[in-house]
Image 1 (cartoon, rainbow over the protein chains, first blue to last red):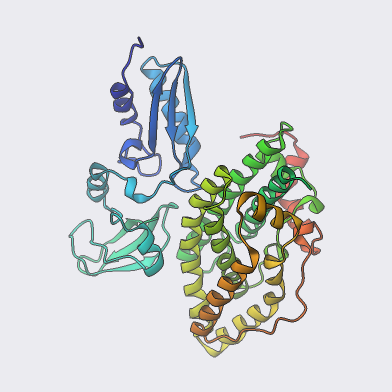
Image 2 (cartoon, each protein chain N blue to C red):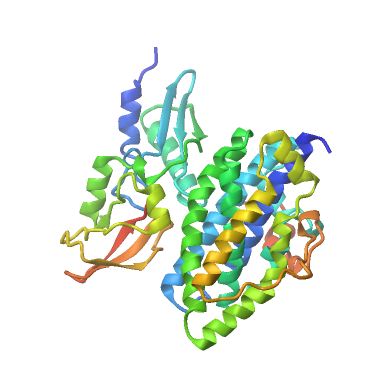
Length: 161
Length: 252
């Protein structure tokens, strides 16, 4: 009988912040794919983008967070399949993004969005839908840059993949 | 050649394509004329480096000699690289870089889509991940090719030259050798003639949109897939490998 449950571990992982968007935890982001408790604890994580520089940082933060709670023997497994898409971001995560000033990705949009462009993205500050794409890229690999035509604020959009 | 060696060679080639193109794009970091495109280029390059890492990690496992991704990237010589000639060509001007990306990514996207359905589970999952990224790239780069082709007289003239100049490297993508054939038969890999049909249709549509003319298919250059490179690759690799060669085993 181990000293901690799966739920506890998930709660601790829920306190590990994404290093590039610190309002999101890795559970909000939907990259925690599995928790196995056996002789050791195995956490399955899936990378967001192939080249995401945060991948290693996140893995180290997971190790640290669990060690802080007395879980010493931790193994991280990288899981590629099924590939992470923005649909894995939780509703709570979407809410936090909006509050933080980043427009969350549209749900179920991954395929269509890639082919035909995004649907209208609402401004996370004033909710106006009159917004324009400034660049399909932004400060990190996962964001695009937008501008609101109503309140004139620039904002970031978590792009759909 | 047995099917295991063919698979290793094939995965290494995928890694080489991603790394060499990624490195060419990295050469442009901090050299773009405007911030948005600067970020775009760096973001796209990062995807390629990430893909190269996944392919090399798998190649090293298949090889089973205790090597890792860094050995593949930094400790192999020029003639051991098996990337397409198109990808090692110097960056040239912005129109050249965009043209190269569109020509390659229209092929690579089709290749990844096919690989995502192949029988080797590991290649399939890497391809499924990478496919989503390359689709985003191709959309962005295609918009630029159309903007340049259908832009001013000057941009049209110069990007048409880019297309004419790089076209001769496009044939190599579809030349099936023993490795392609074995991977197709033994692992359900892509049929290159099918990829070529789709590529031609996609490229035709893009060029028409961009008001650019498709060049004649004369004198295709090839050899990269067999390790026979143009003079440009050696210089690029020398810079890329400098640190590991000078300080073997250096790590972050």
